Amino acid sequence: MTKKKAFTPLLYLASIVFLPWWISLSLNKSLESWVTNWWNTKQSETFLNDIQEKSILEKFIELEELFFLDEMIKECPETHLQKLSFVWESTKKLSN
Image 1: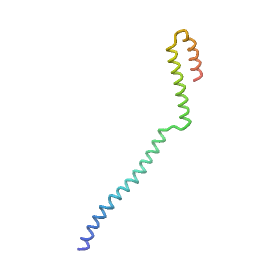
Image 2: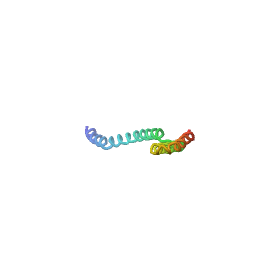
Image 3: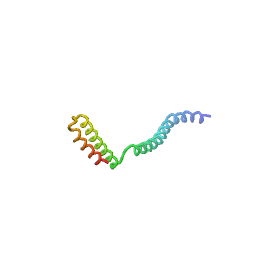
Image 4: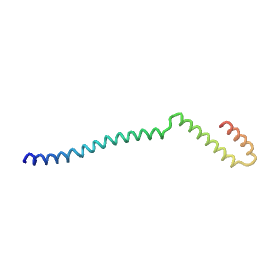
């Protein structure tokens, strides 16, 4: 009977010390692999490769130039409108 009474506090002490440590370690390892997998999956979906990025950047610059030209046409008087219209049409043909 005394061995059983002496063993019980040791069992409680071991469960107080080692059980939280074991749970923490288990959760840490499982969450680490889950987060790493999730991060790698999301990262490949979000970012573009260099070729796609350059292509989109070129298209954006082209669109910005066309927008700026359109704003210039709107602000110009009618005498210069025909000259700029020709430039606008030639730019549109080159972009397509």
